[in-house]
Image (cartoon, rainbow, N blue to C red; front, side):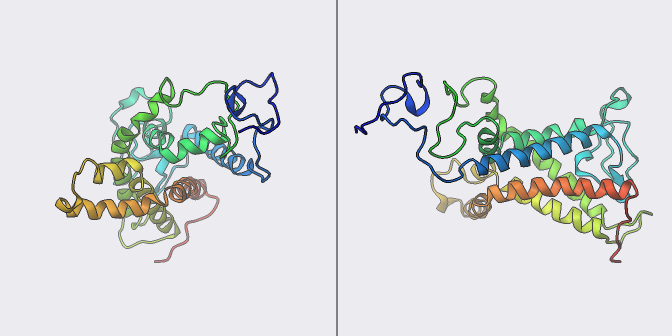
Length: 274
């Protein structure tokens, strides 16, 4: 359909490539379309900076009976002695760096390849595309068909690793009902923080698109599999809130680590309920 305008002769990509409608503007949006990708980029960048600092700090991640989710399970010999916790020195004495680097690769890989987070950082950092109806600035688009983005397809396998990690963090939450002397029947503010964190982690993990496909995929007739159909329905409800759960769990795990850091470093004492 002719519009009466001609594109700039120097603009030869995106919506202005030959054969597309001859509209001189890059887009016709008049709203502040750049705000969501900007907020997304700032939020993700803040978490990356904080988590990188805490991962390499290798200190103040255990305040009995609480352990930071960044450092559990602890797979090296240079871990703090966490009473009854997941101290599994599988890597022995030769590992001299922070033990957090051995375990964070699994939840981090799960989140980086998550369908929602792909959308978030593709738009926020790579402007691919920056927003709906706004052309991306890249001259060529290959999607996730070539390196390195083709590696996003390993998301399902990271999901398999995310499940046991969530299980271990659940165990850490149960240990949070002890006091610093290893006696059961304790509950402090840190216990509540760990409890909220693990609920958000499980909700986010189970809302994953891969989980939904594993639970209800490859079935010809749901009527022949009523249990899987019911589970698929529950996961589908969570999946509809995947973006909310992604951000909630990301903020939750960061605040949980921050809380344990502040208690461990002596900034304040953990308030006791009983």
